[in-house]
Image (cartoon, rainbow, N blue to C red; front, side):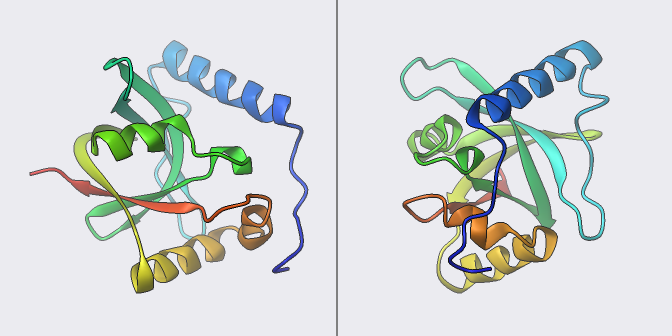
Length: 151
């Protein structure tokens, strides 16, 4: 599948899904939209960063899996070009709060690189068989983001 472009829903639908997901989070206090990863599946968490321009808290829902004490997500922007705002925020200030099902923790973000990135990408590929095709839709490399526990 490498080199082919997987089919995605239209951009307006992806954006609508983001808004609905956040709305359901607010209405249910996260009970319906935060779940832990299961074997072969990713989980969903709520990442809160500090806006790089506004200085205000900004929250976004992210898919993730656990890698030891770390949480791993991808800066994919719905597989569209451009970096997602939350990743740009983390590049300016890597400290954030991560809310998972039944857990809330302070984290520090960094991009995986080299052998670590390859290993984590392969883990994502085991969860999502279309990963390479989705990534091919973007003009640049998709950052694999490691969220480490803050001291």
